[in-house]
Image 1 (cartoon, rainbow, N blue to C red):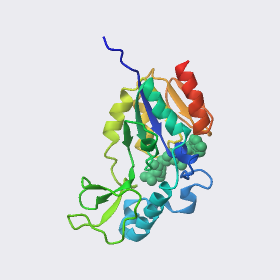
Image 2 (image 1 turned 180 degrees about the horizontal axis):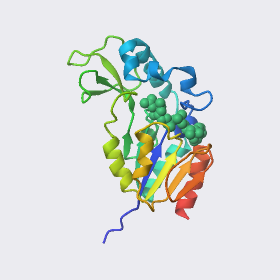
Image 3 (image 1 turned 90 degrees about the vertical axis):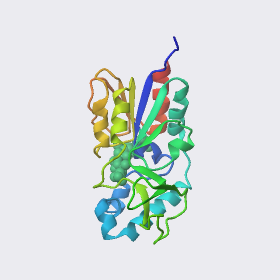
Image 4 (image 1 turned 120 degrees about the vertical axis):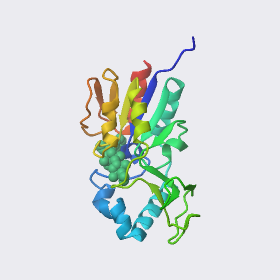
Length: 230
Ligand code: OAD
């Protein structure tokens, strides 16, 4: 019989990209200290001032072109030699892709894509270029960032919860577990599945078998890799 690999699911958040130079949201000095989240990341904000939001995401996209994946992203990709790894990320950057992870599920969308305002299934790869104000999709509606905003449904949550429900090992890296439904995913892990939380701060994570690695992502993932492979 074929030797099947254990399923490792990594739930990642802004903290995994912090050492690449991308700000987190809720840390001191984080993005939500600088901006009002409802002004720049909610569907209500888009209706009120779409130009401001377009500029905000154009800046994030430009910044993404200037940073690189770090060792934590790369270790997750390397773990594919030993496990059947799926990355479920809240991040809208493409650093997991650039680090060569092969199965990635973006819960909150992707910066390098735009979509039609009228049809969420019409999605365009735009790379790192800005969306110009007034640009339209073929259906005539405005192009908007392919981001899931506060006040909108999270289309990938069903697929993500099914993935977590099959995890033999769950790794939670760099997320404050503040934003639902993403934060609720940990509760889908089978009862005995070991959960490893990599974060410099104390994260409240439900589960019977939780190991906390209080380190930044790069050092913490190095430690975790040793623990998993020894
Ligand atoms: P947060 O900013 O809420 O949390 C970042 C987490 O990363 C915190 O737990 C930090 O302690 C941790 N952290 C900071 N530096 C780190 C490092 N070097 N290594 C590892 N961890 C580090 O970010 P998220 O939980 O990802 O959604 O936020 C979730 C969602 O809220 C985002 O996807 C975004 C935001 O509003 C939308 O905009 C829709």
